[in-house]
Length: 435
RNA sequence: UCCGGAGUAGCUCAAUUGGUAGAGCGGGUGGCUGUUAACCACUAGGUUGGGGGUUCGAGUCCCUCCUCCGGAGCCA
Image (cartoon, rainbow, N blue to C red; front, side, top):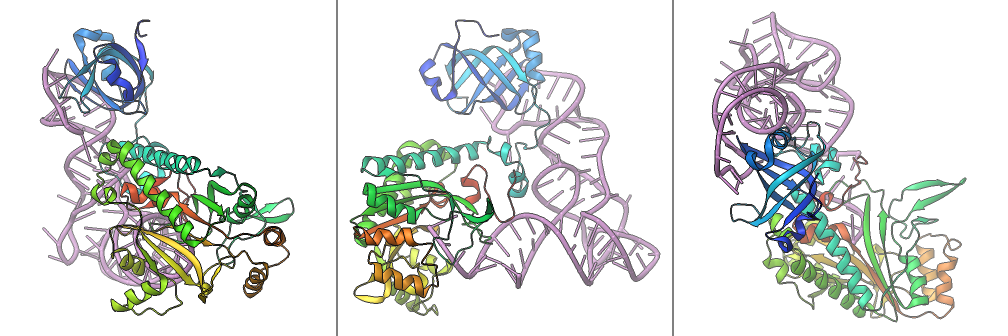
């Protein structure tokens, strides 16, 4: 056991203890030995530090324990914190002793290369690696930045239900569920409820898991993902776009301020992130179609953009691009039609740069009861199930707007990851519900 | 669902025209007082994804099934 006068701390706070005796509780990341001198890379969840053990300092017995350590064994080490340029990270512990908590069995993830399928099968252990650790820290900071931005702008967090009776958008596939002898679904968006909440609390947001039973097999899709959805009363499309771009820019700024170390671990190229600033360039759907046609792409007005189309649009700027005013036919029934051209709806998407594509989608909602009813009927949706939603247009209807931002896509973009599966601790995909 | 690619040791991969399945890492044993994915020596480890076929002989050729990866559609 460590002497009583030794302070327990974490790797994150080592710089506050230079020259002092501390105890660290953690796991073996790696270890090396040159006979009577041992090097132990200790991981404690906040960071990794090198501990130096000499046989003459720790004694025969403790040194024998060190020599028997396996990767990921849990232990406590105590000793003196010293600055040393030879140590990764600049600090190291000159150990006085150690206590083993559990000797780990042969650890499957070795300090060599592995394929993603193997790593995903061992996701519960993979999370301990330096790279995954960095991603989780950035994800945490992104979520915190989102909440800080919205909270400090008088948005109220109101949670919306995960179990819902009907589809928000008719087209998308939902996970069904048996709900006491009737059917129900896992939500694909909190938006309809957000609209009710906005009429009660003005500017609101929900932040929770979202489910889509689409058989998508791409680097941008999960079946369970997290989305933040702000919804603003008395807000039009232009106001909506301004909120969205300010949110995105503030999140990027925060990660640059806080997560320099993590971005370095991830080898993220910083200049493209440092360049992000409001206002983002705007491009109407019609302008985007003209752009595509000008580039020789065979694309007719009225269709939806594919991944390749989005890339071409993205490449016109090193900023995220706000694409707005889409054909009404490809958008949801609740989207407000453009008074200047009723063929198009007041929707907007934000396309992230560097090929990351859509990270935000939203728009102005239809606040007129008759127009909304007409759209409902055109889409063959049940008026009965939407009665409560229609009530919002009967009792003090106002212009309002909102958007959803996909957390995993934002994390993938900011971290520079090739696939969203690494942006969440336990990804759910078409071929994976385990671990 | 469609198109393309891949399944060989615990992991990452190699194996010439069809001719004795190998290496590195990890594991085990021993050595080393400043290592940086440490290094050195020795050692154990295989139904080559499953099934069927061609052949004197199949990891290699043919058929079939399974799984995974990438892309498309759809979307955040």
